Length: 102
Image (cartoon, rainbow, N blue to C red; front, side, top):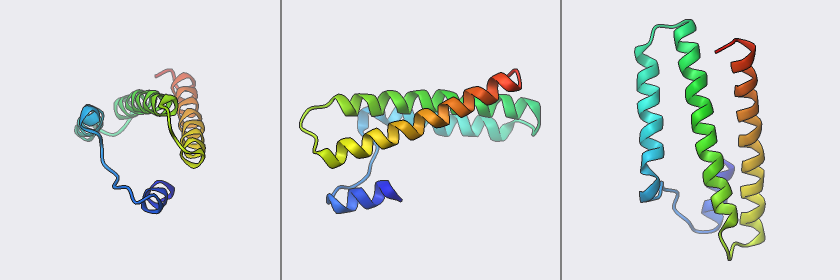
């Protein structure tokens, strides 16, 4: 919601950049693979591995965005907040992975 509100405020259209379509495709493919797996341990392992991979990819993208010049303070603050949230999600996923020996 926050991303959409900020984009609207700045008169921007949200879209996946052409050079990042592989990220979205990777996510879709990963989710398809998961839906083919039976529920249980195999699914759990695949899901947590997928989440860790996707969060690392997104964190890299946000860090790259933070390094781009000429961003206003509001954009920088939003990206920093997003980075903090994604890093927390990654840490939680990695904790689950270690806890369950995935």
